[in-house]
Amino acid sequence: MDARAGSPTSNDQPALIERARRISLLLARIGLGTVFIANGWEKFAMSGIGGTAAFFKSQGVPFPWVSALGIATLELAGGIALVLGLLLPVVGTLLTLDMLGAIVFVHGSKGFFIADDGVEFVLGLAAASLAIAFSGGGALAADNLWQGRRAKVMEHTSR
Image 1 (cartoon, helix red, strand yellow):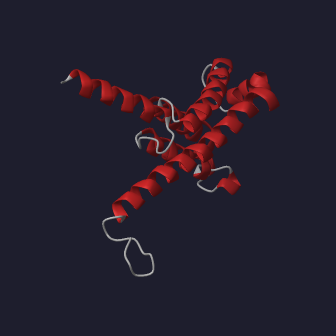
Image 2: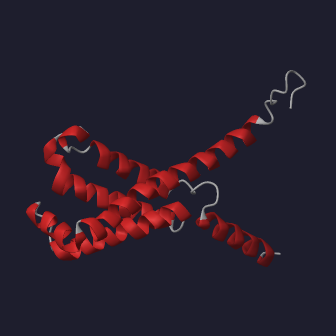
């Protein structure tokens, strides 16, 4: 800390930025994961797989019943994995592909804005999923715990 009014010195700024990055990624994972959990849960509990499959069929989604079950499972389990920071490259990529499918089959023909059921929201979810997939996950990400242990094992075995 600088003696002037308790302000951080320039040497402290990288640490503060890194801490803010880790916390912001944690909050982004939780927010994004919650959205996917809610959407996956809705496909199981509210619409039911049959209702979701009927909607998918009306939109031209191939194999609508299998697709409905797969997408509902991906969104629910993938949302939980995002919150936990677990398997982020795989889960984030799969959720990005899920949202690209939603653009192709449902939202793409309806324009951009969410008010018209356009691509705005699902494009945001796709972009956020892709960003989180390769971000390292931030604070409290399960992936980081494994990587930290693996790095310690590699360091120990290289001696």
